Length: 313
Image (cartoon, rainbow, N blue to C red; front, side, top):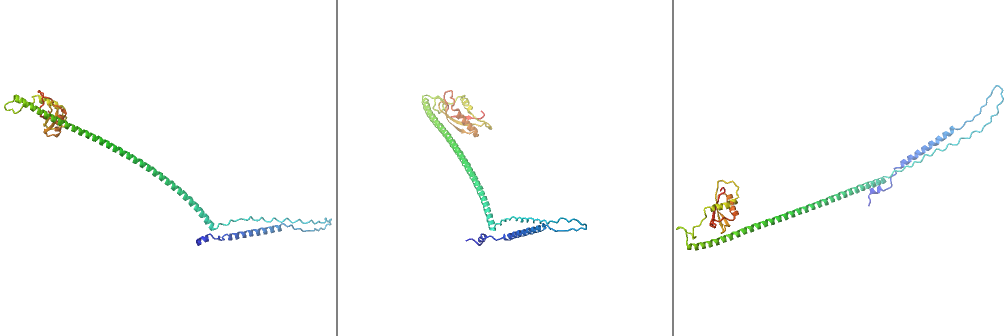
C-alpha cells in the first residue's frame, strides 16, 4: 500500500499561478483603458472651428460678393484602434511533483552513469589483478622448476661423486687386499725358502761344518753380511727417503725387513721408534718405495734384516 506522502505527491498540483494570471489580466485592462482615453482626446483636438465676420466702413464701398459658404470639411477618419498588445503566453511553472520527478530522474541517470563507470573501473582493476596474479604464478612456477632442476643436478652430482668415491674406496681396498695377499704370498714363499735352506744347511752340516767350537748354527760355515753390504743397502734406500721437516738431533728408527731369496721386500715393521713419528713414517715409506734390496757378495740377502735409519745420515 502506498503511504500518505506518496498520495499527496501525486495529487493535483496546487494553484500557485492564479494570482499571477489575475495580475496579468488587470494589467491588460489598464492598458486598454489608457489606449481608449488617448484616442478620444486626439479626436476632439483635431475638429475644425468655423465662424463668420462682417466688416463695416464709413466710406461707401461696393459690396463685396456674397460669401459663399463652403461646405465644412469632412471629419478626419477615426484613428485606427490601438494595436492590441500581444498576448504573452506565460508557461505555467511545473508542479513541484513534476520537478521532483525530473530531478529524481536526472539523479538516477547520473547515479547509473557513475555506477557504470565504477563497475567498469572495478572490472578493469580486477582484470589487471588477475593478469598480475597469473604472471606471478607463472614466474613462481618457473622458479620452482628451476629449483627442481638445480636440486636434481645437485643430487646427480652428489650421486656421481658418491659413485666415484665408492669406486675409489673399492680400488683402494682392492689394492690393500692385493698388497696383503702379495705379502702373505711373499711370507709364505720366504718361510718355504727358509725351510728349504735350513734343510740344505742341515744336510751340508752333516757333511762337514767349518764353524768354530762355540758355533751353534747348522750351516756349513758362519754366515753374515759382508763389510760393504750395509753401504749397498743404504745406497738403495736413501734415494727413496722423503722428509723435509726440521728435527732436533739425529734420532734412529730401527725397521725389520724381510725379503725373498731375490731380495724382494715382503714385509717391514718398526721395531724401535726414533721418538719422532714423522721420521718413523718417512723411514717405513722409504723401505716400501725401495721394493728390492741388493744381494750380498755371496748372492744372498740376509733374512731378517734390521735397518737403522737416521734423517741426517
